[in-house]
Image 1 (cartoon, helix red, strand yellow):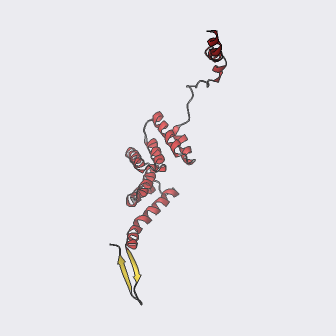
Image 2 (tube, helix red, strand yellow; image 1 turned 60 degrees about the horizontal axis):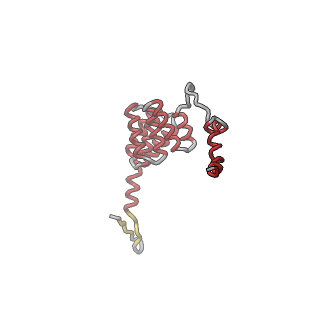
Image 3 (cartoon, helix red, strand yellow; image 1 turned 90 degrees about the vertical axis):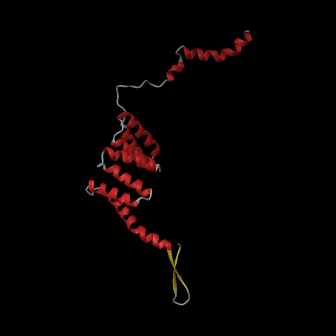
Length: 182
């Protein structure tokens, strides 16, 4: 019996020190101060988006949604983060919900236009960018550039499709044949 006690004594003594409030309790983190306000989740999320940390930004925006509730700013921010992560379907739904709450919210319009462009819906994106451009009074360079790209894509799609569908082949001296891929 004494031999067993001698074997377990090195294990039991440190455990007893922890339970008695000895050295191990000084490693506890300090208690949180609930009287102080934390940093706004939207602000943190915006800074993380600028840094390219889209997944962390999405978590910060979700925290803002829990703290503030679901509002236009939060919905637009969540849509922007999902757009940056390539989750186009989720981004579209969130941005459309934001625009239901406030149809004149320019950042949501711009981001919805970007989603639609990525989805290949250049015509609808053009209309959305035109709304954003009008509401912004043409002050934002990024909206102007997005609108320009949307207009270019909608006007060039017919020519691009025709260009891909036909080819000109030379047959002999001065004879050309127009071939179709139909």
